[in-house]
Amino acid sequence: MNRDTFSGYHPIVNFLYFGFTLAFAMIYTHPVCLALSLLCAVVYSVCLNGQKAVRFGLLYMLPMMLAAAALGPLFNHQGITVLAYFPGGNPLTLESVLYGAAAAVMLVAVVTWFSCVNAVITSDKLVYLFGRVVPSLSLILSMALRLVPRFKAQIKVISDAQKCVGRGVSDGNIPQKVRHGVRILSILVTWALENAIETADSMRSRGYGLPGRTAFSVHRFDRRDRAALVFLIACAVYIIVGSAAGGLYFRYFPAVNGLWDSPYTVSLFVVYFALCVFPIAVNGKEALVWKRIESKT
Image (tube, rainbow, N blue to C red; front, side):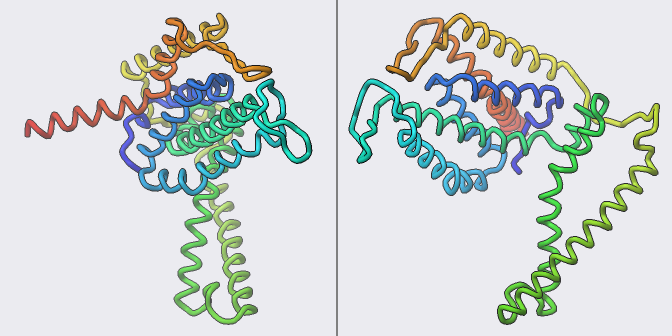
C-alpha cells in the first residue's frame, strides 16, 4: 500500500468521510455528482493501492460498468424519447439509456469507495470506534475483515510447503491432485481451529468481557482532526441543505430534466467535489511539503 496521509487521521474523521461519500453516492443521482464521486473514488483508490487498483479497475470495474449500463435499457422501457424498438416490441428510450449509465456509474463508484474503506479503516479502528458502544459487534467485524486475508495468506503457505514435498495441487494425476487439495484444506481447517482456541485463550487472559476493563488506543484527536471534522461536516450540511432546497434537482423520467448551470447548483458541485477530493488533496499537500523539505536538504 502507498503512503496515505488521510489514513493517519483520527478514525472518527475516516469513518465520517466514508459515511458521507458512500451515502451521497447512493442518494444523489445527478450526473455531475455521480461523475465527481466516481472520479475521486478511482483516483483515491489508485493512491492507496497503486497498480493493483488500476488492474482491478480495468479487469473488473470497467466491464461491470459497461455490462450494467447495457442491461439497464433491456429491463427499463420508460421515457418519451424512443430511439428504436426491440424485437419483442418494447421501446429503447434515451431516458432508459441515460438512467442505465447513471446506475452503472453509481454501482462502480460505491464498490470503489468500499475498496478504499477496506484499505483505510482497519480492524483496530473499528474496535476503537465501536468497542465501547457494541463491543461484541466490533469484535465480530474486526475478525470478519481479517478472516479472508489471513486465510489466503495461510493457504498459500500451506500450498507452498506441500509443493516442496511433491504434494501440491498441480502434482500427479487428477485423483492425486484432488487428494492433495483435500489434504491442504484439512491442514487449513486444523490451523483455523487451533488459532481460534489460541485467540480465545489470549482474550481471556487479557480480561476481555470483564467489567471495568480499560483499552489502550494510539489514536488522539488533535487540531488537525478537529479542522478536518469541521470541514467535512460543513460540506455535508451545505450539500444536504442545498439538495433539500432543490439545488441538485435532476430527473430521468419521463423526460430528462435538471439543473446544470445555476450559480447555486454550481456551488453545490464545487462543495461536493471538495468533500470527495479531501483525502487526495491531503496527500498532495503532504507530498509537496516533503518535496520542499527534501529540496532544502
